[in-house]
Image 1 (tube, one colour):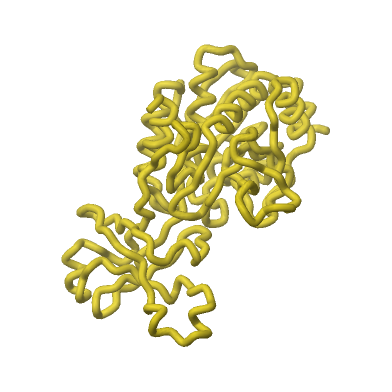
Image 2 (image 1 turned 90 degrees about the horizontal axis):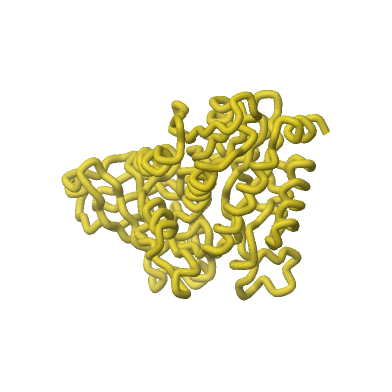
Length: 358
């Protein structure tokens, strides 16, 4: 396994849902420290590494988000089954019968998501998708007392049980938290590539918290950094699987990084968008484009922070996001790093002023 893939594996296999990002933040700090002159953190848990190219240059923020989607223990039945609250957007189709880990103070406990057996359901109920509130987690206990003895408490974090791996001889990354440890790793990679390179600005690369629950950490991190330009680094949807034939969007795994020209939280700054797209063309990078009508990203809070910050989102078409296992192309990720490094080198004071005042 190469060094880059190992970094993504380590990030994905570290557990951290919204509000519980501490372990991932520790891992992120370990990765940022060797490529940063200073580490900054906000009080919600966001973290960035700083690198100065020109002392009075514009501030450039680029960040993924530390949190993955998961659940929280909210109730224990008298017979020892757990009820749970989603943290982040879960489609009930992908939750039932999956293995999960309950993260307790004394260690991990294996659980299985269950429901009333279909054999005992009326025919009409077998046809519908069960709501998450109808599901429970079986940890093998027979009473509340046994659950307590296992160390499980109300409010404990629950995460998918799904170890990172690769496909197609390492060309594809497969993991539970590629949304958005891939963006976190990209921020580290860009700082690493620019460690001994000249650039006309001050870089802040890292990650926010609680993106999966209304982008809560993005505004806090932006207020800490007070950037002049911001890039949200995140995954998008791949439309290359069966069922998307004839679909209006054509974002495909392995066909280049992804630019979001729209999502429900932000319309990107036009000159910044043009700069990124023109740079991709100059470099021979196929920059795919998506208008994401079913979600938002951290750019939604970056761009309305302070007095307004020109912002754009950059990412990668990814299959099966918001499930136990997603698939992402290493090539797309590497090209996103190539592109972001090239754009950052163009963001001197004159260019940033023009972007801000267009």
